[in-house]
Structures are given as structure tokens and as C-alpha cells.
Length: 442
Figure 1: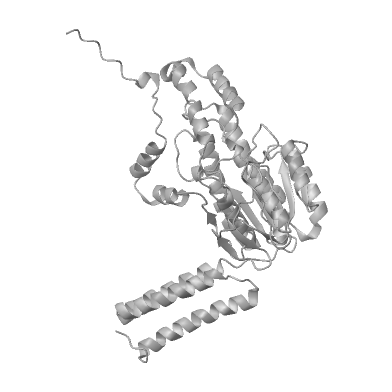
Figure 2: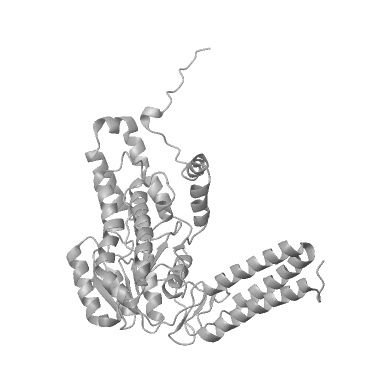
């Protein structure tokens, strides 16, 4: 056991002093009040020190304690936030898909909570832009909301925090765009920008350049996305595959390549909103998952290439949240009609009309996802935009990181078994149905 005045005890005190000095130095030089996180870290380190040097040998105790100090320091460094200083951010149209303006309508129960002036807002706790103290789960927390998608809510939040916001929409005269104008300041500009139309993207670039000029763009958030058809990959039409790739992948590339010169000027951040389905193969999401997987790989390669320019590339892979990406009953009926009209007769015969029509139940189930609170995604998006040391990957949502770990490190059969449990679709194709046993007369 190590005594207080022994060499080992003095060494442990020196380690604590060095770590504490580094934390205080960072606070002094960055005007960031890390607040409760520092208190929690110091408390845990104190308890860890007692355990390491009283229950373990000197070598293992010192090694373990030093490792904990390093991890704590890295974690606290990741919480340092940059000043807003009217940074400019572009957000592409969200999951309103091809049915609306890309913004959606306000949902009941979602509200914006402001405190102490325009530079303080609550996001799943408190986000104080004068001190950048991120505290999750405080009692006064009320999720700022905004729309039925991430982009709408993020645009409102950034506007309240003092950013210059460019919100790309599918229809600049739609109800969602008009509501966004009414509820936001003059710093927010609504842009007509369908990411699948290069002419609109170029016109949006012209308008953004006119406003930011040599300052450049601090962040581009590629948030546009559609889910397409939910069903077996063999049943999914090529039109749906192309639409998903056009919006979810090629659209993001179009926006990225167009606005990268402005990002490089500001040494800013490119933030791509992918999906958990882009890293984990989920049944019945073949078109959507494939397009998001392409976006995930695109982001990883750009992260390496753009680092020399000082541009950070961030990937957001949310779990299941209820947004308007799932479409409407009218859209589902149209997709089903298109499928039945264009499906090969032998495929239609093997699967059966009943099975194909029942696939709508999957869409309905997904549209009623219990996770309506978008604040975990907004919290990570804001951290990716303002953190001094943003992460390369964020996985907001229940069990999203767990799925990523299972699909990455566990045997494939484990991942497949888990997915089958989640997508426990009772119906089977007609050709695979077991015939009813013949009635036996007694």
C-alpha cells in the first residue's frame, strides 16, 4: 500500500497536479466554462486515485491512473466550444422528400426555450453560447423543436444562437419555408435548392457568396434525404434506387463540390447526415441503406483529403427518429402502384399480391417511431458545428452505437440474427408459404 509521503504517493500527487493545471489552463485561455464536467471529472479522478494506489501495485496503479487522466483530458478538450461570431452555416433541405418543401410542419410538444437573451438556448439541457456549457438532462430542459425533420429544427436553433443561416428548401413558397421566415430573424435566408438540380445549387451558391464574400462558410450540413420504398430489395424498383442515390448521395456530392471553396476559405466543417442504416445492413431498406452507405464512405475519404486544407469532415449516423422522411399514406400508395405496374410477372407471382400490399405495414410502423425527441441529434449537430475539437463520427439515438459495434466487431451471424429479431415481419412470400396440411378424416 502506498503511503502519502512515499515516492509513489508524491508521484500520484504530481500527476493530479499536472492534470488539474492543464484543465485550469484550458479554462483560462478559452473562456469556456466546462462547469459540471470538470467537477465530475475531478471527483472521479480522486476516487480513481484512491483505488489505484491503495488496491493495486505501484506499476499498475500508476499506469491505470495515468490512462484515466489522459482520457479525461481528451474528453474535456472535446467540450471546448468556439464563439459564434456570426459564423455562416448552410443546411440543405431535410426529409420533406418530394412531397413538400423539405421542412415540414411544427409538431405538438416541441418548443423553443430561450433564456437570458438571444444567445442562450436550451437543447436537451442548457446551451449557453456565452459560456458554451453543454449540460444534458437538466430539469428546465425543453427540446427546441422546429419541424418534422432535423434541418428545420437546426436552422431555428442556429438562428437563435446568432449564426448566419442559409436554409435550402425544395419549395421556398411552401408552408414550412414561410413558417421558418416568420419565426426567424433577418440572419436566416431561405434558399430555393433542390439538391438534385445543379442549376438551383449553383444559384444558391451565388446568393451565399454574395452575402459571405471573403469570409466563407463555416459549415455545410448535408441533411437532404428520402427513404424511398421499404421492402425486399428484389421488389424495389430501379426508379426508387435511382431516387435514393440522387438525393441521399449525388445530391450531397453536388452541394459539397459546389460549396467547398467557401468552406476552405473559412477552414470550416462539412457535416453529412447519414444513417445507422448506412453502416448496418437493415432488411427492407436496400435502396436507402445503399445510398447512405455510399455517403458514409464519401465522408470518410473526404475527411482524409480535406484535412490538409484545415476543413473537418463530420459524419452523423442517427438511429431511428420520427421525421417526415417516412412520407405519407398517399406516397406509400403511389409507390405500391408503381411497384405492381412495373414488377415482372414471375416475381409478382412468387411473392404474391398479399405480401406486397402488406409491406405498407412496415412503413406505417416506422412512421410511428417512439423517438420523437430530436434533441440528441441536434445536440450532436451543434457540437459538430461549434466544438473546437469536433468528432469524426456521431451516433445519436438509442442503441445506434451498439448496432455499429455489433456489425463491425461481432460475427456476421450475430448481426443478422439481431436484425431478423428487429424486423420480425410475420408474412412470407407466397412461394415460400408452407401448404396447409390435408384434412385427415377420422
